View (spheres, rainbow, N blue to C red):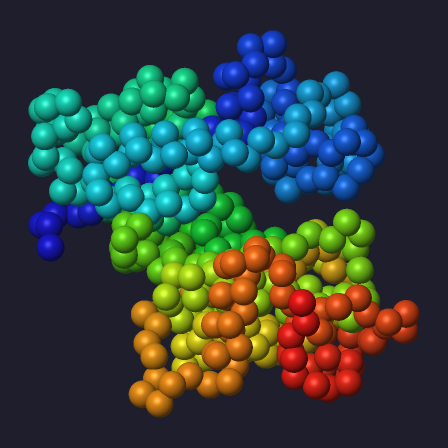
Length: 421
């Protein structure tokens, strides 16, 4: 292990999608740009993917419904997302980051953690001398990103991922904030509790209700009393509030990746059969991708967003790893039943993780595994969707209620177990 404190960078591109649009379309520079528009110009169902800093002054923010953004900023320029373009620019950014260290952990398309502890002793890009400090290296990195992409990034530097992430958000855009070793708790103490990683709106509400308004309040709170209020998560949260976070930066080759797929409904729905069919389709799609990588997954995660845009995630780790859509669906349905209530559903997502290499059983596979392999072979030859489950055929007019027990994941209306072309 490298001696001395770790030096972790959190690199966060500034208003990424909007910044790319302003870079490529000079007439948008200085304008309030809202990325995420739909064809109905602010009256439809879109959501804000990113808002430029000019738009943020009007109160427009990410994940806000377009209709709400329109009311706050009708003079804004509403732009459809171009994900292919953003992904290409993101690839350029990450290529630059990897010039400074091989310890790069992507967080999303526009942010990453870097462990530069060892890089401070290495020769820099292009044969440049080693950086004397993490701050000098970060400035060099920011200059390289700007030169290579025409975009600015904000960087936080600390001894841990959590503190570095908080720091990167302090002086946006084009910011650089350094938290020196030993100064983590003092840096965090005056900040509102919502700044702490892992504190969402509900957790913030719970903390405010018991008089904990700042991260320092949380750090000084009685641990036993906090656990009675918040459960076992309280101890971990309090450690973060004190600036203690030993989680390593996981390079892409080491990170626990996930394979997932989501579906957003055109109209929010509470129809039980529609929701069940969506989950089954998602599980089948994810399972096929797991098999394509010759993997098996132990953990299935459900992402659930209701009509009020409140998002929940639930996960279950299974005793045995699987690449079966049947098994993923069985676990996902249990998770769904645990989170679904009276509200309509806007989005469902399924993710598989906790991977290990797939191995053939000593005495061959199960009937389900054989069916999956046949199905994969057919779709590889004739195209995706050329074969489907009978239970995914259009439902009859009468729809099943969501509280009813679903049919088996491969059963059709008559209970037979077959696949139809």
